[in-house]
Image (cartoon, rainbow, N blue to C red):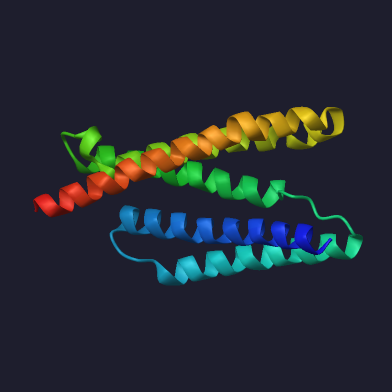
Length: 168
């Protein structure tokens, strides 16, 4: 059980780090300044929630690979942040050059990724009971392409950011 436990703890740590990075990026883009106290508080609460989840399930002898409730909360927050990002883009500029906006590409990436993964998580418990193989197919053929799509759009956003900053 050692390797399996380590794998599941790494998944929880990845989720906490992803949450911290996404919230840090969006809070800086939306407010124009770093919200360090908010970021540290939110990440600490998420880390504590994940630690309670891991400890509770280890003591019961069953630790699921993916914590649906915690991750669903994170993905809903990502969707809200993306929608706030779209709103701020439309509110700030009278003319929006969407193809050159790195923040727009990041919002698109996070919105599509979070909504797709949330859709999988919505049916996760039902499918685990009914058909365990089908949920694995969903993870394989929906989650992985969504992850690739998100990373591709974030790469485009990073390229646009670098390109825009070097043009100044």
